[in-house]
Length: 138
Image (cartoon, rainbow, N blue to C red; front, side):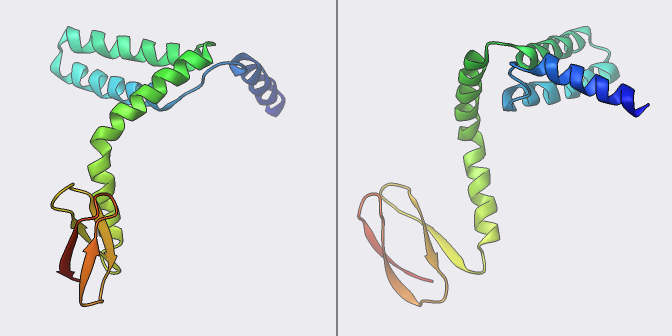
């Protein structure tokens, strides 16, 4: 039995050699397609089911594509687009994690977020981006 598994593993490795593999865009399209598939099953809308199948096909196309450079460029563009939406969430997670050690302030002129240590009393905070100064209690 284990001999069969080893042979299958070797064959899969040979098949996947030189292919793009599952990147972030392919993974996100796959997850969205699965969600659409479940919604399509419960709602009985054929368009949702068709969209989920198209998404699964596109995810498989990206995963098994041999044009690695093209798929990497598409993935980089997707990551830059996705970063616009996840940036605020990442900052909130970081603020929550550092809440006992640091305070976060926003510069009034350039909207830059500035992190300062807690427990220093009233200090003058200078924005590293625009040079604006303001006094706050930490």
